[in-house]
Length: 129
Image 1 (spheres, helix red, strand yellow):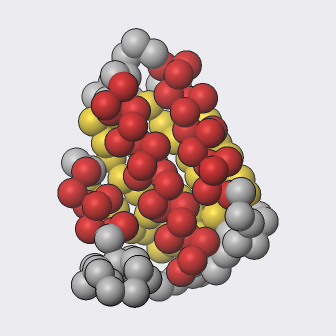
Image 2: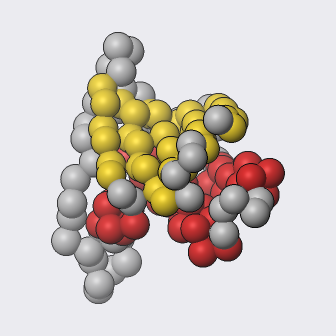
């Protein structure tokens, strides 16, 4: 099993999502050729969406954990908010979002939200390797 952990505490940093994507790409490159390009792009997209949601809706900080298992990549994003992700009607007129959680659920084999003892949550997406 291969794992990497990244902790970010910058409140709504403009570079936080880009940094999470870069860490994810580096993690996936270390697994090559066991993860193909399409699967890697999907993992990066899901990380981007979950980190964006954590920053926007979860209190402005997050912790990212990536784990590679024989058939899956486990993406876990923790934030300090107890509010659960919810499906929203995408905003096609004003561009305020609503697409991310739908997309994550469509791309993942499974999504799981677990409360933390500190009062926040961990949002996990299991993706094909």
